[in-house]
Image (tube, helix red, strand yellow):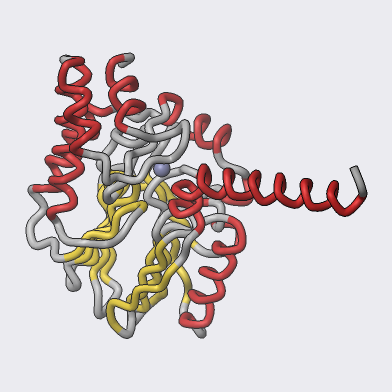
Length: 277
Ligand SMILES: [Zn+2]
């Protein structure tokens, strides 16, 4: 075999490998890395992707950053917040402890960082010291920021041992963290405390929150309050399929439009998780 032919074949193999991994990685890549800015009004920007979805809110008294992403996108988010803050202080809120929501905390040195109140020993094991929040919300915290009132509600165990949602009261915008995955199968990790029954209960509580106009999910596109019911119905369907295997095919068909993450999230993974509870 001459040298050119070897190079040509290696090239074809490389293209095949690249093509295969691109196909395999596409949903995960999209979930974690594709970023986009959604400008809601002159003071509120939603930055989707690059980890969990984030919000940057400019108020009269401070700039609020909701979830700090990971990797390069975390730094970009910090630079955006910093550029909007000027001399105002920045306050960070983490909806939960997962890395794709907190790994940018390290950029906010000296800033107050809120999270729901986890067992401190658990958090110390799971979160790098440089990303560790320093204020822990037990039940709720209402902050009057001048032109916006921010309500932090610790809703307890659901996606993790402790999930917090953020309501911007004047705007009627709710950041759900990973309590809502929009048209995406949810991450369910036992060590994190993911509990489908408690998650359904939490979604029911959220459904009773009055006057929610816009929902910012932890992952996926933003939408309205119907996304909360969609997530609740997903879990009810998965529970039905977990209890009755004859319904499994029907549920796979119903949710075939939802994004999967290879080997991590799918209809089958959710059903198996529920069965092992
Ligand atoms: Zn999460």
